[in-house]
Image 1 (cartoon, helix red, strand yellow):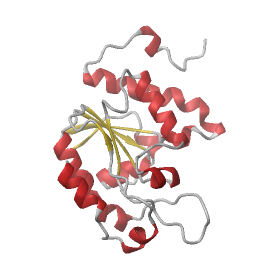
Image 2 (spheres, one colour; image 1 turned 90 degrees about the horizontal axis):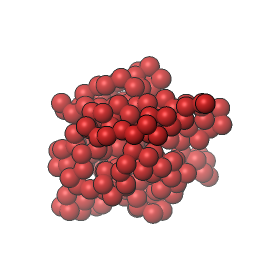
Image 3 (cartoon, one colour; image 1 turned 120 degrees about the vertical axis):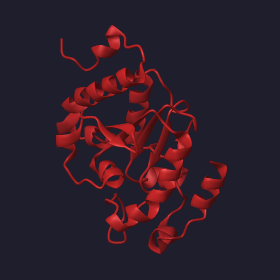
Length: 201
């Protein structure tokens, strides 16, 4: 993993991304983790800090991971893209990675997955599903349904940033139901408190 990290940090295959990035966001967590989360690409906060999911969406993901009984140190978190997509026509914000960018960067993630050999992968959002499986089906249609990636069970769910929008706050329960399926697949005990998260009384 150290050797792979070194190669990834030195990558300049996407010259436009290498020129605009502050850091390469490799991944974080336990290299022997049973559970791996895969997002789409770093945002501005991640680009500054060099760690995936550290902004508002990352804070929500961290709370989900903790509610599952894990920590960021006991799972592994990575993205399809290791560099923040450049936004030359706008001062802030993010854009979706292009297909070419995802295909160029994907080998690094595939090596991470091969080294970690997680028992379950959670794909956070439709772009992560597209990057891994090449499918462009909407996340609303595939979330909560077990798929497979390299014979590893794959659970697609909404990206945490989707849940931060006020109109989508009620969908947190759907994501939690997906995580309950993940816990069951991992053979983890589930308490009554966990089963009842986000249920209205």
